[in-house]
Image (tube, rainbow, N blue to C red; front, side, top):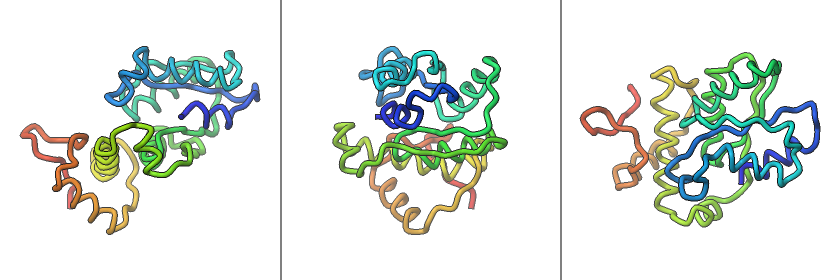
Length: 189
């Protein structure tokens, strides 16, 4: 999904750099055993992004590392960056933006994903419950990571917070962060 959007954005314009970043995650381990970045690179090339424009960062295991390691890779290659287009999962756009804004504040940032409905995304993953768990995990990180210095703070509407609380108490908690005692991390009031 992600390389298609990225390839459409980059096309065959040689002035642009394309970085595919990521190791594996619980949701990609089986489909992308060699790591997300390697598989995304192959797909981008299939979609006509010139191989010479595609850089691979295979170590990142979280959004912060995606940003830091990609930024460092570009700097090591001597590539000056003034703007970035972040391509992520649909429910990760805000997290990618907030993390990038914190870790790379001097570039213009656009965050995007494949346009799709929640139902289409759940069908693509094949497990609606897991998708809800992932959505809650992403939202929880938007709430607690700013306090930990990992991303900028963003407004979250009250009705979204209410839904988060209902669903997390209702058992959709497999992707929620926990403290050393196993309690779900909550934002400071």
